Structures are given as structure tokens and as C-alpha cells.
Length: 182
Image 1 (tube, helix red, strand yellow):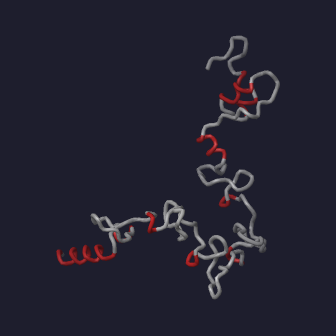
Image 2 (image 1 turned 45 degrees about the vertical axis):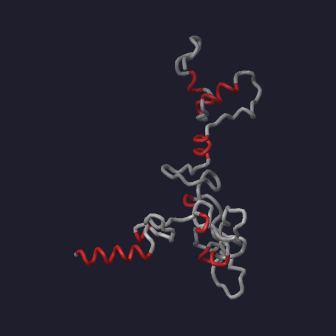
Image 3 (image 1 turned 180 degrees about the vertical axis):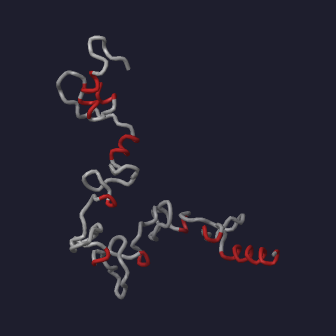
């Protein structure tokens, strides 16, 4: 972008959009009419994401308060003296009783969602309309495609990274086959 001949070469550096690091799109759209143009904030999705991330150098976490994530000082802290951990509930961190207990009778686990622990259905619900199970991955429960399956063709048992993406049966078989080869 070329500057008009009447302006000194570095005059744009003293302009408010340059100082505030506003993209050229916004600086040009506001114009010199003197009116504020609040509706024309044409930020790209990347710029929006960058504005929502922690201002600490190298941190990519979302901001909680004052431009900082929880790790770098954003959000409320535990009300116990000497504790700098983020508060979860009633002004306390999880170490000092800030977690909500599961509502299920006899359960002493911490609630994840809706007052229930993971075992009692307190996680994210499966996105399948007819399902009431807890989602495992990608918003779906295991039955609706939310987790890994065994690598063996036409075999749909659950698989895990620790078992090389094989079900327990095939992993044991592979382990024994390798044992006999040694």
C-alpha cells in the first residue's frame, strides 16, 4: 500500500490504527469521516482466535481474565491463604474442597457435569439424538463411533493406543507370536 505524496514516509506510524496494531482493513474502513463504524469489524477467524489467546509469549491457551489464561494469572484464585491455584467452586481450588461431589448416593467421586461423575453419566452426552450415554471422542459414545476400533479388518472391538490400536485379543495374539519368534 502506497502512502499519499503529501504525507511524510513515516506518518502512518503515528496514526492510531498503527499504534493499536489494527489490521489495515479496519483502519481503511473507519475512514476519516469522524464517525465511528462499530459494525464493520471484518476480522479473519485467525485474528479473532489470536485476540482470544493468552498474551503471554508462546502460550496458546484461551484467555480467562485480563488477557491471561488460568496458568498465567487469569481468573479467580483459591481463597485459602498461600494458595495460588485457580478457584473452581465456592472460591476454592480442587485441593481445598472446591470440587462438587457426585449427586449419586454413596458416590464420593467429583462431579464432571450436571452434578454427576463420569461413571454416573456426568460427561458430555453423545450427539446421537436417541442416545443417553456419555461421549468418549468427537462428541459420540463408543457405540456411535466415538472411539478407536481394532485395526484387524472387519473387527469392531475397542482398540487402544497402548495395545497398538488392536483389541485385547489381537494384541495378546501378536505379543505371543512375537514371543515365539524370539
